[in-house]
Structure formats: structure tokens, C-alpha cells
Image 1 (cartoon, rainbow over the protein chains, first blue to last red):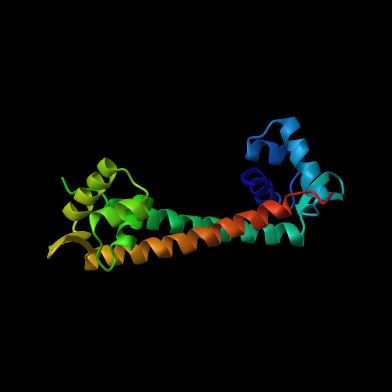
Image 2: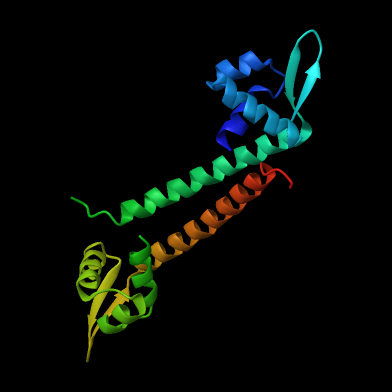
Length: 92
Length: 92
């Protein structure tokens, strides 16, 4: 999920494959697998111009927003958990 | 944290040690360790009447409320995560 979100973030406004590969720090094979998957799922689309570009679709942008929401909520949960753990830690 | 919350929940309105042990499904040794810890932290207090009772303190009740909040938020995060995972699952 993190990798998918990372790729969509890089390709939010369109990106060539090589740029996604470098910025996403992904191997060629792994990237290709994810690009195919995201295109098949309708989260990413290919635009052919001078160069082949990958661009997040509306559905892809929604995925990114939901992922960002998830991360925010997960941070709140982590903070609450840490606070409760602290209250179970004896004061030394 | 789950064990501590379980004990405090059982002892919210006061409980004998044996009842906490049975309802909490805890060994005698483990229970004693937790009871001592919770008393030392000020989350639980001992009331001596006909029988020795353990009762959650105000701080203990606050811990329980915070723990319940944490669980609710964690469920929301889980639900959001599952929804995002579903959107990454190819329709077969």
C-alpha cells in the first residue's frame, strides 16, 4: 500500500517511468509490476505524447487522499498509545 | 496495556482479588504483579473492609476511558486500512 501510494504521489501530476523509478527508489521490475497493477485498477493512466507519461486518475487521487487520512489517524492512535504506555511506566 | 485495562475494568466498582483472577483469566503470580504495579501507579487502590477489595481510582477510570478511546480510533484505522487494501485488490 505504501509503495502504491508513493508511486501515485510522484505521478500525481504526471511523470515518466524513469522519474518514478528514481524518486520511488524502486527496481525496474518491481516498478513495472506496480505500474501495471495501478493501471489495471484504474488508479493510474498512461498518456502518450512525445513521451509516455503515467498520471494518477481521479480514483488514484482519491486513493491518495484516503491514504493520507489513514496516516493521520494512525499517528493519532500511536500518540494515544504512547501516552497510555507512559502512564503505565513507573516514575523512577 | 490490555491486561492492565482488563484488571481496571473488572475492578471499576471494586473487586476481590480472586474475582479479578478468574474474570481476568490470570495466574496468581501475574495478577499480583499487575495489582502491585497498578496500586503503585495510583490507578488502583486497596480498600480494607470485611474483605480486602481492589478499586480503580479516578486516575484508573481515566486510564480506562483513554484506553477505550484508543481502541475506537484503532478500529477506525483498521477499517480505513482494509478499505484501501480492497481498492488495491484486483476484481477477479
